[in-house]
Image (cartoon, rainbow, N blue to C red):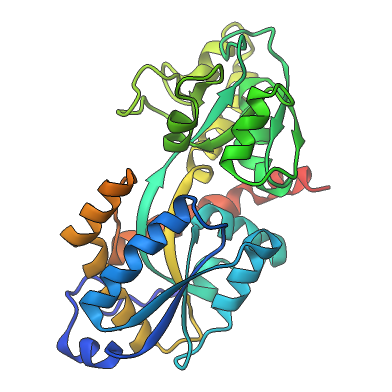
Length: 330
């Protein structure tokens, strides 16, 4: 696969400003209004408009679990500048289910990464992730397909058999299901987990990473030395420990929230390059930083080559995990 990196790290050129000024653009959100993706989109849109002269509108379309928004973005052209803000992990999973021959960057171009956060397990009251007698748990998620990595594979790494109850509509409903004791746990982004569990009986039991998180260093983490996987696996055979360790490493790479902004490769390379320059300038601007700080949303931007490299790493890891993940869909 050849990635086009022309101008990926450059400041926005006068030519691109002239190219974009006055044109209409749409930033699709594959989620309902009011959530994290919506907050990011509505903070980015006015900054992008001010810096470029684009007329950017935000449109929410959560139909089909976000697949409709993806299809609308992929159908865009130079006459219809339609971008999408979505999880890179979710997009990669969806495309893997549609075709084993295509990956994220063969169909769409990444204009920039807004924020990255690992996922976390939120457990109900009285449940201890270190308790090795905890071997069966039920999780709340939106669909079965979006739980293979953060629930099923993470559970296998921990030696916990998991069952998924689907149909819940987002992180608020996920955590509410835990509080109502309809399920034992759920998985959401780490920042969301910290926010949603303040002052209630549910607790952030595990961050799906290979090191402590600086925002909450006392929360146990999944993989690596000192991680819960090795602690729970103490006394098991070397073969089983290696098996669980490999599962944990897959989870760390493939789970989490990588909030990126994408556009179809059907849009000309020149226009995509100009939009990438514009997005880079927007993501690194003080105006966006202030706007997101007011919303209580973190900004952790990756732009240009660095954003493409992160997505490439994700795609390669997803390819290696595909045979295993395919077993969960049977």
